[in-house]
Image 1 (cartoon, rainbow, N blue to C red):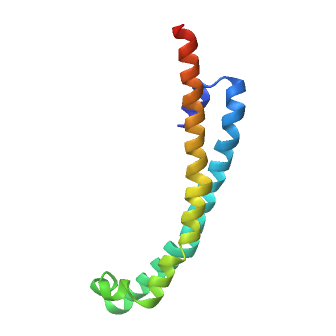
Image 2: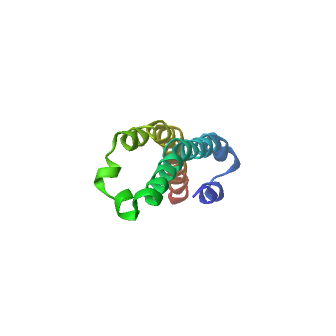
Image 3: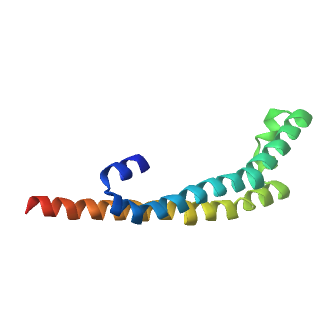
Length: 112
C-alpha cells in the first residue's frame, strides 16, 4: 500500500504523506512487539507447561483458559493493542485519505 501511495504521489504530496507513514511504521512494530512480549510469549510458555504437565486437552479447555493468571495476561495485551491501533493504524488511514484526496484533485484538473 505504501508503494502505491508513493507511486501515485508527486514529491510535494509525498512530503505530507510520508510523516504519517513513518509514524505508522513505528506504531505497528512497537504495538506488535508489546503484544508478543506482554501476552503471546508468556501465555504460550504457560500453556506449553500445562500441556507437558496435564496434556493437550487440559491446556485447550475453558477451565484453563479462564483461569485467573491467563485472564490477567490477556488484559496485559491491551497497551500493545492501543499503540497498534492509535499510532499504527490511524496514521495509515490518514495517509490513505490524504493520498486519495490528492488523486481526486488531480483527476478534477485533468477532467476540466
